[in-house]
Image (cartoon, rainbow over all chains, first blue to last red; front, side, top):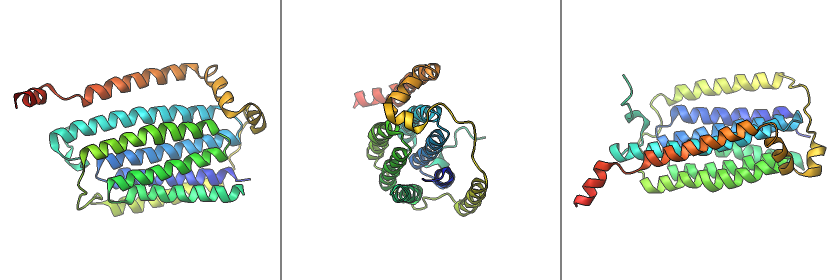
Length: 100
Length: 175
């Protein structure tokens, strides 16, 4: 029997990897992929707790998170396409229109 | 046996996560994200969540990742010379420190709480899909409807955002 701590540790390491990717990568698409890594880490956590605490709620929330990830990917990629069309770049450092 | 599967899925998903973040070519990043998603779905299988396993493979790998790959192919990006942020080493140091702290806290905590009403044996009797369906359409109906509205909004937003602007269209017709 795998202890719950093992699952939570895997999820923590994955989450930190994704967070690192969001902070250090400069390509917008890869920043979005790192967000997907973080969402997956959260899903592992939810499903593991749902299994070990014998409740269905965690799996349902994981399902809703997958739906929200789909919406986030669609909107994020649409924004990338709009920015790419006008600036021919996906570098996050060059997107500073809203910065003051 | 379960231990072997767990360590395989866990190690490969962590390695694929690291590769997703560090590889140079965006298409390679997308492919290692594919490996990550498949191995995370294997972890779901070990946790008796076979419906989530199917959703992960169909929705995440089949829809979301293909969307990413489509956009990558559409843009035909050149790889940047400096693809990491200038202050990447500081962030890397800080986040590994944070990860070590979180791991330390995790290994100390007992994780105990009131058990719910769905033990593994009862779920295995009817199947996970049945249990998820019953729970979703009874207790979590409002959240389900909210997610539906959210997805509708996301569809409309994506179409409105990615539409060719009027000025560009006129320019194209002119040629």
